[in-house]
Structures are given as C-alpha cells and as structure tokens.
Amino acid sequence: MAARPTQDVVTDYRYVPEDFMKHLMGTLGIVTILVLVLSALFGVPEKPPLTIQKYATQNPVTFEQVSLRALDGQGSIANYGPPYNNGTGNVESILQKWTGIIHPVNAAQDFILKPLTMAATLNPSIKPALTQFESASPALQTLWEQNYTKALDHARVVNGQVVVPKGVYGPVASLMNATLRLGKSGLMSGALIRNPNVVNRFDNQNYLLFLQGQPLQTAAAPLQLGGTQWGIIHSAIPGYPAAWWMTIPTWIYQWPFVANSSASDAIALSIGFLFWLALAFTPWIPGWNQVPRYLGLYKLVWKDYYRTHRTRKNQGDHTRGIS
Amino acid sequence: MANWTKLSRQALTEVMSIDTWLPETMPEYAQGFMYMLGSLTASSFVALIISGVILAANGPASWSYNGADRFAAAVHFWSVQAFFFFMMLHLWRVFFTGAWRGGRRETWVLGALALLIAIPTAFTGFLINGDFYSQWNAVQAKDGLNALGLAWINLPNAGQMMGMHLVVLPLTLSAIIFGHIVRVRIKGVVPPYPLKQPPHTAERS
Image 1: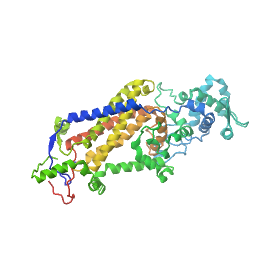
Image 2 (image 1 turned 135 degrees about the vertical axis):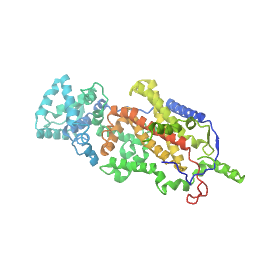
Image 3 (image 1 turned 180 degrees about the vertical axis):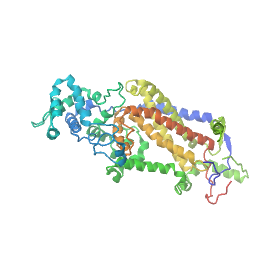
C-alpha cells in the first residue's frame, strides 16, 4: 500500500545525531549480560520426565490398569478417534474427522501385544498366554478383561508383583503381569517406538501417548500443570517462568463454557485466534484504533518532544521534518 | 511486461541502502528507553539464534549429560524469556503510541505476525527438550491441533518438532522480523499525535 499523508501525526520535528551502531551494540550487550547472569544464577528448569520404567516401578497396579485399558480399547488413546484410530472418545470437530487416520495407533496391538511378542522371545513363558488370548473369541477376551478390570480394584502388591483375588481372567492376568515386568525392565519404551524401516528413533509418539492418560495427569496435577489450572503458563519447576505469553489462550480455557465443552481445545484456540486478529487488525478497527489517543499515555512517552516543541513554537521556530 | 530486474533493483535499492540500516540521525521524539524495546527484542532474538545454533550443533539431548550444553540450554531458555518480555513491552509502547499511523499499518501487522509465529516457535522448543514439561505439553496440546484439523503437526513426534523448531518456524519468524524491521527503518518510527487536534479537524500538512 502506498504511503499517504495522514492527519494524525505531527510533521514538525527535527532529526538529531544518533550513533545507531552504538545503540544496537548497547542493547545486544544488555541482553547478553542479562541472559548470561540469569543462566549462571538460575540454570535451566528441567524436571525429569515420567518414564514408563519409573511409573511401572512406583505404581504397579495403576500401570496394569493403564495397560489393560489399552488392551480392551477403553483407554484414552485406544478410543481417541482421528488422527489415531476410529474411536470416538476425543473427536472435537468435523475438521478432526476429515483429517483421517494419519498417525495410526492400534493401542491393543502397538502398546501391549507387539511389545509382549518381542518380550516372549526373551521370556518364552509369555508365549502360551499370548497365543491363548489371540486365539480367543472377542467375547471371551472381553469377559477376561472385564473380570480383571474389577479384580485390579482389589489388587495388592506383593514383592513388586500385582496380586488379585482368584477369578476367571484367562491369560489376561499373566499378560498384564508380563507387561508390568516389561515396563519395569525399561525395555518397553524401545518396543513402543520401533520403526523397522529406519534405524533412527525420531518419532517417540507412542511412548508419550501410552502415558498420556492417568499417569501424566496424576503427575501434572500437583504441579498445577492441568488445563484448568492455567497449566502451560506454569513451570514444572515451581518458581521459574514458563510460557507466560500464553496467558490469554490459557485464560480462555478457564471460561466455564469452554472448560465444560467437549470441544474445549478447538473453542479455546479459535477464540484465542480471534484475539490475535483483533490485535493484528487494530489499525483498521474504528474506535479501537483511537483508544491510545484517548488514553493519552503517549503524552508521557513524548513529554520531552511536546515540551521542547511548545518552547520552540513560542520562540517562532518552525522546523519541519520529513515523516 | 515490466522489466523484473529493474523493478527488483528499485525495490532493493532502498532496502539494501546503508542509509536505511545505519542512519546517523533519528527524529528528536524517538529517544530514550521506550525506543530501545524493539532493539532489545531483536537482540534477544540474536541471543536465541546464537545459543540455538550451539545446541543444534551438539544434538537435541546433549544438555542432559554435558554441562556446557546445559549452560547453552539455560542461555537459550532465558533468551526466550527476554525475547517475549521485551516484545511485550515493545507491544505496549507501540500500542499506546498508535504506531500504525502515518502509513505504518503493514509494520504493525508484521509485528503482530511475529508475535503469532513466535508462540509455536517457542512451544516447539519446549517440546524437543525431553523433560517433564515437554512430555506433558506434547500430549496436552496435541488435542487442540487435532481438533482444528492440523493433526499433521504431530506434537508427540519429537523428530517433526525438531524440524519445526530448528528450521521451519525460525526461518519464518526471521523473515517476518526482517520485514518488520525493514518497514520500521524505511517508514521511520511513528511521529507523535498532534496535541489538541482531533483527526477530523487537523489540517493536512
């Protein structure tokens, strides 16, 4: 757009000498010293991640519950929907449906049965349970899973093993105990992020998704990291700043109609984007673009200019600058 | 058809001029701390690039076992804090002084775009860190992108996030910041409001 003369800027001002390079080096120097001092004093906030091994070791019963929900299709990823699978548990919009299944996850296979198949080559005693489970009818699988789900509510931990009351669990109890042992071994993470086509391991999606439900929720809540706790603007290490520049979208998440919606993420991000549009189009929004003029804070920013300008005007000096 | 080379030469003459980039004078009203905030933001971006290049050269997880890289990670972390801190102060200054006036609307929009793109640039940096904050925010924020039909941006995929954070987003942000600064330098910083002259009564100069 071509520049055009406007009526709302002064044109009578002078140009004064300025060492611009010194100005730039000065600000760079200030920032350099600032960040070096802050880094030396406070370091960097790094809270160790929640690993599968750590979670399995510290929470054997809930680890089995999480694993069982992956196996029976009730887990948050098992029943998520696009882009992972055909579930319905976390479908917020038609856009999400249109995206399709572009990062396919079959939680039962990818999180449990394939890792156990690999573990069975190290520990052949897993093999019969796997074979029995995979050759059973879906109805029978569901019966075993439901029974074991109920049993886990009464589970005890004895010598690191999960012990449940006697019941009809088929091979599911063995499979879950095997999954727990695999988790505690530290090998499960490797089994989750396998890609036989390449040797590097850039995509750690399934590692994160396996833990995304109860394990991470339980760990995040005391740190005030939950969505309804203004999560992202809080650091995992209390006392440190985090992404405080996300305050407005985080605030939107707290609005009751957003927080209680099944499409809270889609709504919050969309409203946040509207806020940004209002900022970006400030110059074109009548009324809003006059707010600074009426607030008058500019008089403080330019008080020296206005003072010297008044003095010069009184002295009859009308210097005209180039705007 | 117009001569593309001539058009490019005309456009670039001012953009690449030494007078544009290293002025020896400034308007008398553009003095003091309020006029350092944009440069402080840009300086923080320089600190981000330098510390980021060091981290990139050594690999994404080296901070977890190498003390020097951990310090570089700390510098990167505090640089992003400084970047947003000064950017917000700069935003307040330009808003309260109506900095879009006098043919400076594009400058304003480019600044707003820089803020918009800076957010995912910083966020993807948190995601590739591999600590608990990274782990938690990857799984939390993915639902928002999935819901908006942007699932191809797969937040739990650290490899993709590394590409986004090291190349796609900083290149985009650098281009926007460059455009913003070019506009600031060519158009100059906004002159003051005329006192006691509402816009509809002011005379054209």
